[in-house]
Length: 329
View 1 (cartoon, rainbow, N blue to C red):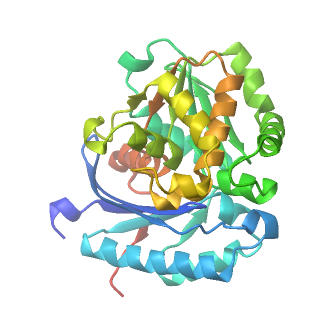
View 2: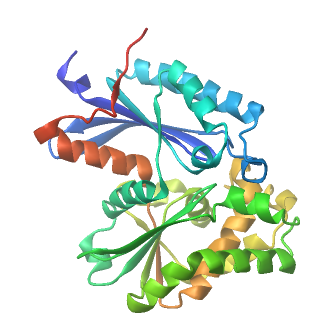
C-alpha cells in the first residue's frame, strides 16, 4: 500500500432521507477530501408513522451501500465507518437493516442525538473562522429527515446542544400537510416546534445568537437558488446567505405547491417533497430568535466531523476500533 493510500478513509452518513459517501485522505494536521457522492434513499419514509422501515426503502438503502462499497474499493480506501441516525434509532426493524448493511461491508453505528450533534458541530466549526464569528454567539442548525440538531456556541464554549424530533420527514408523517401548506399545517408545525424548542429558546435568552449556521439539504438548496455553486466559497469555508432574501424566499417556498416547486430552476427534484416544510421550520425558528441577523451556510456536517476527529487522534492513538478495514472479499 503506497503512502497516499495508507490512511484513506470512507465515511457513510446513513441519513433519514439521504445516504452520503465521503472519501478522504488523512494528512499531517488534518484531512483532504478525495470524493463525495450523495444518493437519495428516503429510508425513513413513513417510518415515523408506522414505526418500521419499509421493505422497499430498505432494499434501496442496501443497494446504495453495495454501490458505495465498490466505489470505496475503487478509490483505494483502507478503513470505513458508517453512521446511522434518527430513522435507524427509532425504527423497530432498524437492526434488520443494520444486519443487511453488515453483509455488504458496512458495520453501521447507530448513534444517539447528542453524539450526532457533537460530530455535526465539529464539522461546522471548522468552516466558521474567528474573523466571521468574532465574540458573537452562534446557533448551528442541521435539519435532517428525522431529527434537527442544534448547538448554541461561541469561540470559548458550547453552551448547549439539542437533538429535537423536528426532522422534515417526521413532521410530514405527523402532520400529513396539505399541498401547498395551509394555515392549519403551519399552526400544527408551530405547536410541535415550540414544545420541542423550549429548552433551546430558554438557553438562548441567556446567550442570544447573532449568527445562524445552517447545514443540511435545505440550506444547500437555498444557496443553489441564490447563486450557482461556482460563486460560493470552497467547501471548507462557510458562505453568507443574504438575510432578507433568505427570509422572503422561505416565506415564498413554504406556500408553494410541489408541482410549482418542480418548475423552479436549481431545485433538485429529490428536495421537493420536504422543501416547503423545511422552509416553514426555518422561518418559524428565525421568528422565535430575533437576535439572529446573519445566516451562514456550512457544507460541513456529520461526516466531516468524524473525519476531523480521526485526523486529530491518529498521530497519538491511531484509528479507533470503530473504523473497520475494507477488503475486496
